Image (spheres, helix red, strand yellow):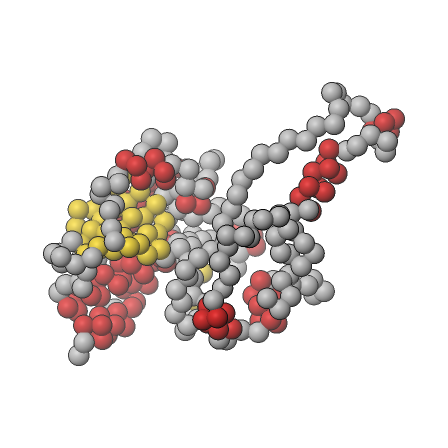
Length: 293
């Protein structure tokens, strides 16, 4: 039996234990947003650290920078001369929102139709358990890993990782690795393992539009005077074409188009436009953007 087969067999035999690991983590309401108890996020970090130790990681510790929720670090560096892989996940979660809209309590993991429901059961405490379960399965089944592993579990991803740059500068030597794998993504569908290679990014811009020196009464002055809100709407609308493509001149000049191989890979995915609409929750009559691209 190969080492891979041995690790997979161990995982299957101990899957219930790994699910219990996930249930333990999601019971902690580690909402990182202001206004929620930061002690719960720290308790979550401590819970992650406990799990890392239980699943074979060495030198497990909480790492902190001023103003940030705790990060958790661990390592398995027992393969001299082999590459080092840095694993990433995050243990903080979004607020549950209107709890009356939940079919079960948001922080009480509940199994329905083969899926585990709770805030963080997917994003991203499942990501933590994916890493710990994989490392544990390899160590228990084969007594070693085929490479060196470091893991970093962040505590403020859901609020924009505002301290991440400072954290990386502070701990750059500790986190050095040959490659990084993030499990804050998803499989395309159940039973279809997937590797996400890129996602859409964000650009934040502050724009101030003024037309008058002071406020005036809209009933007296409205109509003839230009409205800054309407001007801003026109500016925003000019950024995209009706088909959803970016309309900013020159912005795509240095963007590499998908290769034939990449297009073929995307087109091979087992999904129809109707299924895509259903998964996204697109309302009837709303058209998808992009045409046939």
